[in-house]
Structures are given as structure tokens and as C-alpha cells.
Image 1 (cartoon, one colour):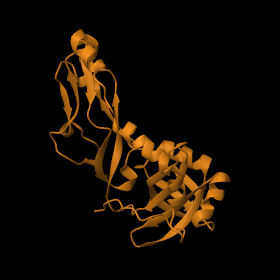
Image 2 (cartoon, one colour):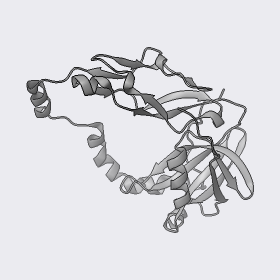
Image 3 (tube, rainbow, N blue to C red):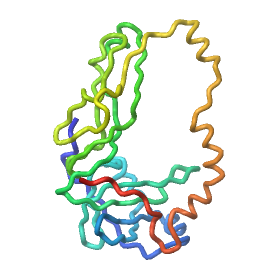
Image 4 (cartoon, rainbow, N blue to C red):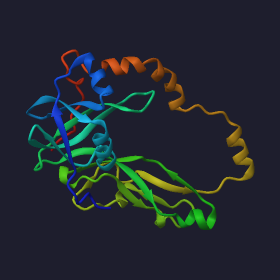
Length: 238
């Protein structure tokens, strides 16, 4: 796994449309947002929806993005993205300005790569326990994702634990013995039938109705009347 070797750039403009009027801005194809940082006065900005989506796909919420606003370039991390719960369209984004000489803590998505021999040879069941890992690094060293090779899982009950993940210039935080992925023994026909017959209810199902009820509120409350995004916790810095 390696961090991006190319510079990710995005052009934004200072935003004059504030408060409830940002709905018209979104209809015009722009994502309203705010640029802020430690010791830096926040600036309302707007970014073309198409450009933002492309950048978000490339950088995610962990890779350094050089945001150009009115001719000035700011090193940033896309710190928070709000979406319309009905359409999944981005309705607001925060750009957190960072210092290139200060390490920050953030969470990076995990991708399990390859094929586990225990699954292929013994019919084992691959179980992943994490979707992201918390790391600490200089902003320019942060990766878009962390790839973990599962080819080391050769037998039933084999595991990948946190201390197995060693990255260049990046410290992975957490309990060294935390199990990230493992191989379980295959289920018998009786166990599989029992599992399929047991009704389950996911957190997503429970929350879906509430999200739909609050959809309009999310659109209206993304920003305060003054035009600034609602306060959100800043990434921890060191």
C-alpha cells in the first residue's frame, strides 16, 4: 500500500449565497461548503458538483486535497460530507485546512485484497471485522485507502490482527491485538438453514424510516442562518 504520488487539486469559489438560499445553489450544480482550520477564519465556499464528486472519489476523506480559492491554495482534508438521505447527493462539504508539518489523526477505509487460501481450499468463511482504521501521519502521507493482503489466511481460524499492519510513514492506532479479519469453519447444512430462518433486523433498517422523516430537515439545517456550517469536531492534531 502506498499513498497517492500525484497532487490532488480542486478549485472553489468564495460563496456569497448563504443560509436557506443554498438550495438554489445546489440546483445550479454547486456543492456549498466551508473552509476552516485551527487558527484560520472560516470561509464559505462553493465547488462545482461534478468536480467535487470526482475529487471525493479519488481522495476520499483522508487524502490531501489542495483547494484553490480565489487564487490562494490551501492544503486541506475533506473532513465531513453531508448527503441527501433520499438521493445520496452531496449537499454540503467541509474542507479542513491542515499544516504540512503537523501530524493529524484520521480514519482511512480498509480494502481486503486478494483471495484467502483457506476459503478456496477448505471452504472457510472470510469474516471482516473492520471497515476503516485510525492512523496518524503527516497530511501528505495519508492514503486514500489501506489494502490488506488476505493471502496469508491459509487455514481455518487464521487471523489478521492490527499489529500485522505496518505502513511506511504512517502509524496505525489502536489495540495491537485487535482482530481485523479471520477465517471461520464452514457451516453445515443444518446451521445454514437455521441461520437463514432466523429473522434479523439491521441498524440500517431501523434508522431508515427516521432518516426519511428527517430528509427535509437535513436539507434545511445543513447550515446555520449565518451561512456557516454547523460546528463539527476538528481532526485531532499532534
